[in-house]
Figure 1 (spheres, chains in turn yellow, green):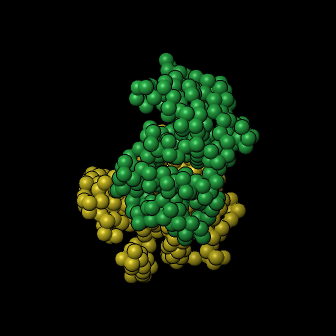
Figure 2 (cartoon, each protein chain N blue to C red; figure 1 turned 135 degrees about the vertical axis):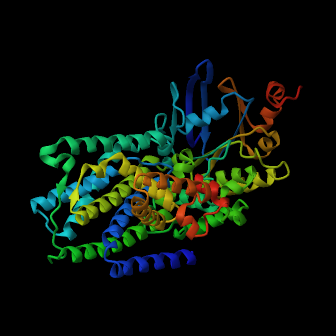
Length: 317
Length: 249
């Protein structure tokens, strides 16, 4: 535990100072943290043995909610847009969750994928509303009432994102230790016994799905602000697949895992795009294979000392 | 019969060509210890499944504490005060023993705060005491998957007891327990049940256990009760001795 706390503190400290010395990294790190938030949502569901291939839905829904509000100048303030975008995706998760938590395993994963692809199609086809494949521009909002220049805005957004990620990770860590979190794990382990404890597995999974949607929505709201532009690509299945990839790459043994995975994903993508622009997907694929075979508990498992072959069974479960 | 806590009345259930319940009826009075015996395939576990909501009968009804529970889910029946342990223990294998009990405690108390770690439940000591009572306190922090079947059986029963049920169904509580330990296990269980005034219905194949711990025995055959009475009456019944116990008169 002490090792993990020290590592967590070191990671936060490194993230906090890095943009000060390398301003070029601010947006990349913010994007990584946003993807880490969505992957954290995926991790919550993976604790129940369920995997969603459609969380791009909540990521993009929140991003578009922010884009529409910013364009309408309803809430031209970043600190208003972020919670509103998150709440919008939470509301959507509350509706979609009613339906998908009735299913398990491949049906759960595919239903999420199907719903996200319906939304992707709507974003593409409803050109007059969504801007179609071109997407929508997100005007830079004020930050705590102050109009920043581009660089200051990016830096402020990064630090707010870092703080929100820490809070989200702390909350999820606490939740996973709580009876609700343990009941969530019990869905993977033995739903029959859970029923015979008088607990509804559906309600437990619904709560986790809601949390998962909110986390993805938080990431989506911030990415809309920092990139200044939203496109249907945010809802595309490849994006949803990346969140799963990041969660597995980082590991689901601890809340730092998805963020580690997201940072590594951005590093690989950045370097591979420069040195192997035609084959960078293959580089990612090989990386994932290496993780699955040699460190099934992911990067977090390696850092926490749980990534060896002895943990293969645990990581595979 | 006074103080009836559970009444199963004329339950019928057919699986394809098998009549698993064929007019099964049983009244259970408060604080009774009823043993259900019978050959394999007689419908003993089906009866428990019908009474606890896992299966729904095609006809007949189950009344618990005056409430018709025939169509209720296992979850709803559990909440009314019916606990259950299984022939094959149903536990959260990747969690520790104490986690299994604490989850039962949280379910019983309705404590679902996302901010309170389960291990710090205000009544966690109660679960350690329960583990101590069933002689498994030493195993509290071990992962269930690592434990032998006999211990899992006891943990399964302890999890059901953690819910403080008014009535508990136990499916073969001593199977998987060594013959030298079965009386010790049953002595412990009886002590816990007595202390909590819990009524118990248990399926059992060991006639020594039946003779010692039941105060009524129901003999199952063909999906219904063929005979019932005190252990002495049943275990000396010529037909039961020949068909169920396997000892000729």
